[in-house]
Image (cartoon, rainbow, N blue to C red):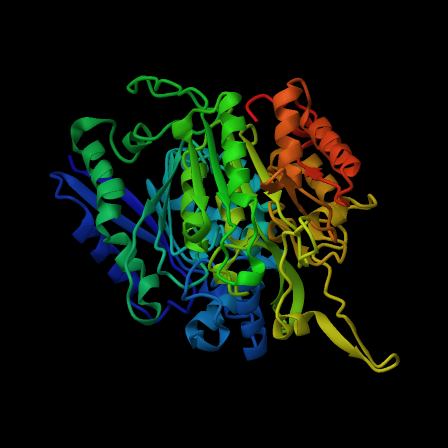
Length: 600
């Protein structure tokens, strides 16, 4: 008797009722699926065009939607193809318009959830293939309480969920759907096919060690929107090796019938028992890793510093004294510390995280702020950045949270990541004598974005930017620590673009879904000075150091029983005694701030 693999397809955006996608998808899967005797592939489809046809999107709304999806954090800083609004194709504009309209309309989402669950209960699929907006429609359904219904939940638990050409982890989307953090799903296995060349606002899901989830890299680069092709994803060699072949093996008498066997190839969904057919993997011991970056030799002579490389060697020595192995510490210095060089090493630092890991990213060099354009095509926020060796005042050659949050936002909450910055938050000035500040002032054309002409005083005054999340908290000073004193700065390590809930909305979510209310991972952030202050260099005899790093290292060596909070307070007191007008700052989960400094 033939075995059947039931595959449910959910299309992306664009009116598919006159297209041949229901023919092309099965053809692509059949070409990719390894020959397996006695196996029949059975296909059904979900079509939702009739729901979307009632929504009209104007050209201006479409372009505004493009800006929302690009400016939310997936920008030219990550891919050279992204963030250039003038070059966006007509199809991409309308895709963006409908994605944003659906995300922002709860009634819209309710209707698509109903459609998804009706088809799943009728067809009982083994595999659910979802492309582009179809992945958002299904992810929203599967993370909703309605997915726990007794006629739905058992069907999802035995299904393999496949997302491709997906915007699930686009910052705008994940902020609005699941509070800035991708949520685990109660499915047998989730495979996320990611193509770095796909320009349709897609995003990877990195550093998320959930047992039943795996991202599969499926790179292909075709002209126009060809790199968003569903058929190309489905037939990619990596998809064959990591999806279709394991499914075929499971159906070929090597396991239970149907995709239920594929569940045994994945770790169990949280809360479910492990298959007895699989050996218990040995848990690895916690890891300690550090990336230390220091830049003295900037190309512009007036920007050069003296103590940053010394700071890196000092911090490396301190970390080794506190238990870090030499081979677990990487450094990136001067001309090697380009934007790409730093980001590639950050990917090493945060790769394959696990509970209990202790990870350190230390930076000594210049800091700056870049005024950025927003969804209304005018400057509306500042970007706090680290200044790499090849910095040129564009996001692509800076280290900002737009790049970093994609690496840390999904970390396990019990992983400890410390970000330590010995730099200014914005422009600094070179001072006379040894007290050199670590910050650079923008050129006048960049600075002009931050200014407006005041007719009354006939002076240039700071422009008022739109606050990122005006309802974030009522506590004085707390919002400043996340979004800057202007309320419009994407600060490093805060995942500002993922924090969209007001305090009242977060309180309500805590009652409805406590796990989702936790939101994106928050690192421990230690900074050499407060916003608006300067971070200075200190000359110890004839050797230059960062004043903050010098104090921090002394304290770590001499006082081994401090909490992180106490460490920063004492470093500030020591700097004040030495006459430096800089107050170190700390931000992080309260349990971590109050914890004893162990590895660090």
